[in-house]
Length: 246
Image 1: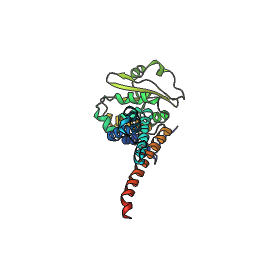
Image 2: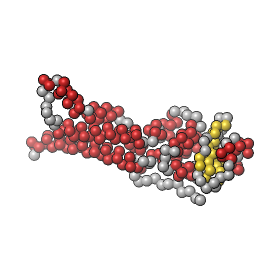
Image 3: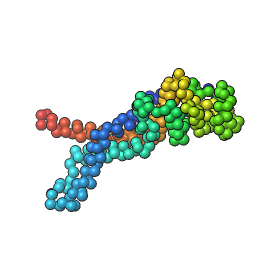
Image 4: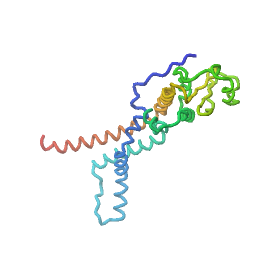
């Protein structure tokens, strides 16, 4: 079976990493939360301090800002519920590299995130064309024996990823795929180690970024509602200013 790596979608700018960029602006978070609570604050204030003479109705501009804020707050909450944690934690490989993780860390990240990804089989298969795996016949027999009794069983057509095995300062991810036994190693003294870390990072990242398309669509709809409400409010204010001049 020949694996063809997936191409980049033309809708990639609606992937989760761009959603994180939009929602991570702290000023927007604070302003949206405060404005979304305004009607509640006004109602409570009117009940506690009736003598303040607060208006019975909220002006249209504030309603528009409130609608924008509520939409943004819901989008923000959806991001934290539906966006894969790996995407929220790392914006790109440069940010990942700044953490100065051990070379073993990306293998554990890859393994631990697989069960949450609908496209996990695709990215496991993608590791071989990217030169990250090797067949067990090319590995020392004593090393293969240390990869676990489960992995020692004959390979089947069922794709299966076994738990990573730390051996000294190296790590090995055993895999059964299409009747073959392969291993994804990260070896400390490998001259191409940094390149392999980067490749495995992006394989995982690319899949995680496009997961849960329904939730991503809802997120961008909410952001669009927020942007539209703000735009209407701005246009309305501009109109009120220029109307006497027309």
